[in-house]
Image 1 (cartoon, rainbow, N blue to C red):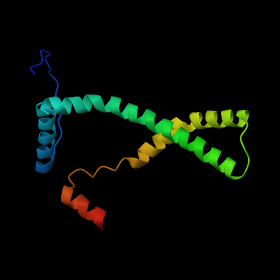
Image 2: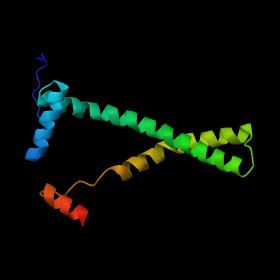
Image 3: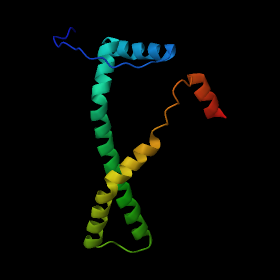
Image 4: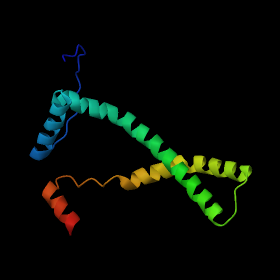
Length: 126
């Protein structure tokens, strides 16, 4: 598909030969050229990350509610409506912070500049 939009700015990065081949393969499977595929990924990454963050927030809030509810019921102490409402408010209030902490912990550290792929793998296995 030929775009009528004139693009005048570039964003570049260096990849290994195997990474480049993988990128070409992914673009081909998607039915677009490499530039279009990468542009779509870069511009869509923020939206996808945002959506994933919202889902993670909700899952963590539900986890907090469920754990506290099961714990309370396991002790033979049913929750009142007020206690449940307070628990929901507490879980909702902390969900964004907890999601950001989880996401930050899950992001692998980038290899130092100039460090090769094989060298990184060797250090990981050690």
